[in-house]
Length: 250
Ligand code: PGA
Image 1 (cartoon, helix red, strand yellow):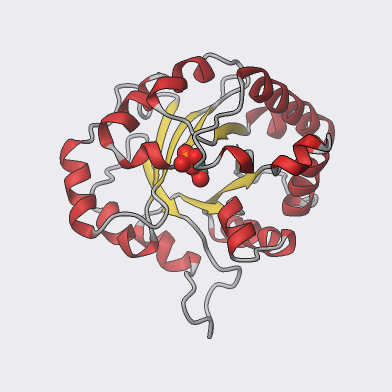
Image 2: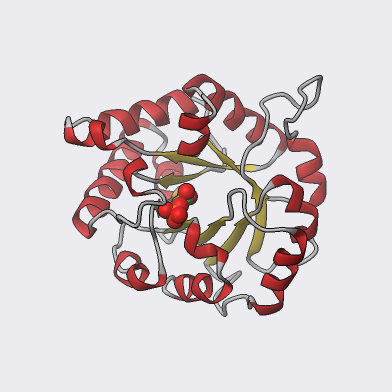
């Protein structure tokens, strides 16, 4: 089964509008974009409008780093999926570990956000990952399976979704997971999805790796059959480096 390869840039809470403009002066869409490869930008909410001006389709998309689980209402400071969709976004990141750990996002909130994204027609990019303590206690797959089941329930038929496996201990630490660790988890995740969900759906879902991906380690990770792309934080802030990372997926 040929799955879409995805290079996703999570800019987190970095960049001003001017810095975003400067970025797109330098950044060039890769050749394979639109032909089995997709590049996705996740800027901070205030930059979405600015970034949307630089996205012309053809395999280059954008989305928000977080959405609220209601369409609208008295939720000061939150971001609705509706204006996001109106701006032309395709994706919403859901359940990033920084949202879970720093902002108290529960499995239940993650599930509601996945449902909201799918209801309005955005593709949720569901982030899952174990902490170092959980890995050391041998609970990695149990944690990941719990996060997937909690987020998806039984509602997968026909629903678009991308999964990003990001071990919490590898995010922003410079400590990338080993090839063995990535390969083992990605293969186990695929097996789990195939067992739990309709076969066609489960084999089509792209599973990305995230956590200290950079130009120096992307090639060997991209060569793993079970890796369908990357969710890149720090290294995506530099256009040259993100282009190099993206080129490993072509
Ligand atoms: P990192 O972040 O590439 O800086 O480790 C990844 C992420 O948080 O999505």
